[in-house]
Length: 308
Image 1 (cartoon, rainbow, N blue to C red):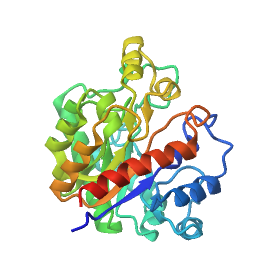
Image 2: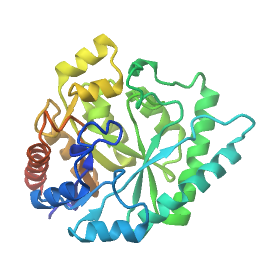
Image 3: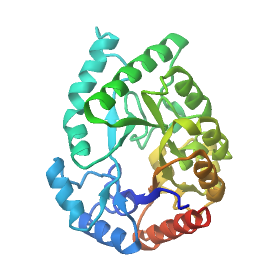
Image 4: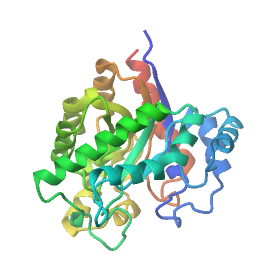
């Protein structure tokens, strides 16, 4: 019996939203046409896509591609002055409406939730070690309650599940952070986006250990490989997240040291059905977009074929 997964890609292989100097001049159409030619079934969103549902659908339909999902910048980790939990969630609900309607129009079932309150991931001069962290259990618990409420709203109003993206430079980065997030949130309201590269960089030398622990919560997967010598240097020298990207901490599956056969084997055995997304931010001048996107696709395609 074949495994019901599809292989998608993020346009970050061609153009980087956080660092426009990395491929910023590349037209979106180049990424879409090359991605389709390579064999990808769909794309995650980036800044160059249309902001409305019908416009987005037209862009993707022109290349017979699906909308995989899209990053949503959430701000639930920190309350504004005078705000309580309910007011924070209400503000997030209002802020997300256009984005969720766009995803819903395009048949998307999960949203990539990136926590951006306090994050240092976009600050090129701030070491990733200076990321925000919750000072006590009460703050963790309050955050989990806000996430639960927001996740429940997304399911009820859009049929979309919140796939929480653990991310370098943010509140939820390390394996211990992921454990706490999963422990405190409702498994019917908050789900996990498992990112192999961020798991490794965040402190898991074998990302499969983190995956296995929380595999029943995983509804979306980002497949990025790592260059371990570069990550060691990033840690030792206190680099920012963006300096890590510029220096090549990440690459596509099959080009680094992560055991993707093990990762995909665990997902297959758990009954995971959904997208496997190649997302490997690096400089296209150093790592040519087409060649690397092709390598990532072929690596995953061959591994998936072997698991049928």
